[in-house]
Image 1 (tube, rainbow, N blue to C red):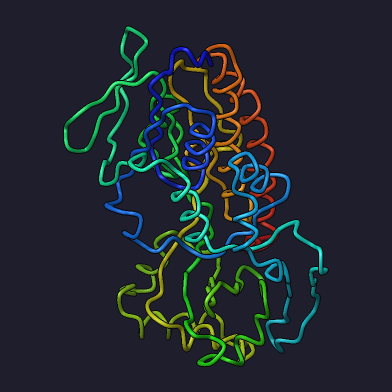
Image 2: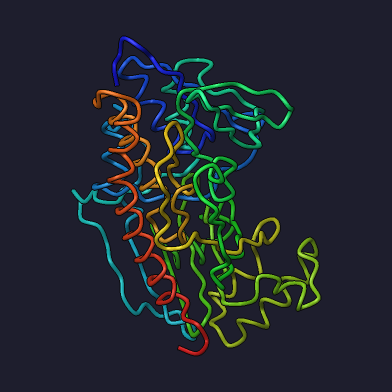
Length: 370
């Protein structure tokens, strides 16, 4: 991209991929604005722990000049993984990282997002600026439509706005579909003291137990927190079918204990004693492959481009997308050349990853008839 003319670039969404893109652009002297519908960086909790892969997420962090700061926060011991027998809670298999193993160290999503936000020029992110859509203007400009009725024109609009992207319809008619699997999200605070037995069961990384079309997964986070997921195949409206109000924690707990009847009591601790509510998270995915005909001045990254089941690839690919797009914008001779070059790499890469994640989900939580 010719640095003599600094095109107006808008990134919609202040998630990991959008922020990585903004950071790399700024490192190379290019201006960029990020629009985020949330009111502030602290408007909501940012989710659990992420493993940053050496070949994807860490590549993006290196391009962003943040790899050393990431390593100072990351938890290499979090790469530990163990599979337990659901009926007895005995360890069936276990992997422990070596002393120098940093292939997939863990970091809390909120910590990683904070690291990226702190690296940006003040004012880069415009909070409380929800986007409702994109207009393709006849003069080659692209117009962002904001939820408050205002508009702004840009040379390039990057949709980094997640599963239900408001930018995606400018490129594709695809919408996410329910995978058939639901995760119910739970958490445990001060686990080393208040939930010591569970803490030992989970270890330093990830613990899983699964049988048939259901499983329990728990992950160590920082600050003595464990985040866990109750995973099962069910209709998207399973709670309505069961006559449950998701806000009625006692009723949800009773129902889930029935679903997992016969599992070892140490695993059922996850269902009996979680802190806070049960958060329903049905898993959605975009069609595989998800592609589109190139449209000048608009592109997508991360979940907006390739929403897939959460099996450790989504955040890594989003960050690599962001870094790759920024690199193309910095190195290619023109704006459209840059977007085409980026899409020619990102689309086949994401299609392969999404196919693998779909197969992985079927292996992890198999359909009832498999």
